[in-house]
Length: 327
Ligand code: UT7
Image (cartoon, rainbow, N blue to C red):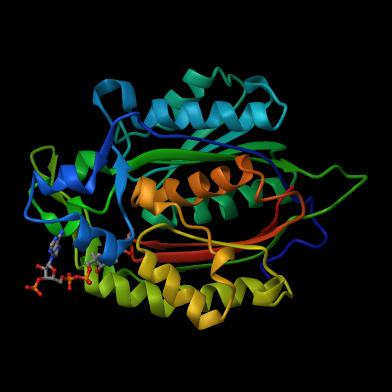
């Protein structure tokens, strides 16, 4: 098992899109709500502002379908071309799943759609899941969306957590390579889980149809991320038979600038290759990697054939990485 697919149909990355709510909440706004300040938040996390859902308008389904629509258009496809929609979310509009609503909003009538719950690892786990359907020839066009509205689940009086999170959605369109030209651009991946750390980050069921707000032991999660993320990146690079210096871009889950800096230092790579946009969006959970990816694609920084490593980490505990070539 090499976690690559040499003899099967390959995965191509043919479009991206993203969407965030209009409403912006700055660190200064938060300082009016809890005992905090811009200096503490920006120096400890790198976050300056985040977009927050505003009523019905900004559901998981609406943000996800806006991001999905853009990814479909960027790929030059129509909703009718989509075979499978995977919606990675941990903040579903409906506990039975939100992917069906996204399918309806997109008008992707041929597609089968389901949710995948893996918190901040959701985009990486969703990418690997999608790739299995593509490698086996089951589905050709797969829309993978990471979308979360964590603002619904935050205790807005808890300064340790409410400063971290933002809402949004990001999407990529994955397509099977043709039989005649079997290129595979998903080069390697590694996924991990450790339920022993579940207590460090969760939204627990309280009873009587209610859940507690998000609860996090920040220091434990920070230590876990800095220790485990480099390891899974090394594994996926190993499966891809690449070195860290071959990478054009490193896109980590946007949780804390200090976590990105620690991983950059550990690998000794050029900090300019480490994508960071959490200053504007905060931690958007499953959406953070595809929002960052889309922003770098839209600005022309990510070009076809660029080599990209992504890594997600968070509740579960779960973490994972994938290495791919854009295009
Ligand atoms: O997406 C899932 C993955 N999640 C993560 O990756 C989160 C990882 N963890 C972190 O990013 C960091 O642990 C935090 C940003 C959450 C916290 O940073 P920290 O450097 O670990 O701070 P701390 O929790 O050790 O708190 C230091 C101090 C405490 O005061 P005392 O006890 O030393 O007097 C806190 O009460 O800072 C205080 N504090 C605050 N002060 C002002 C905590 N939150 C705030 C705040 N404003 N918002």
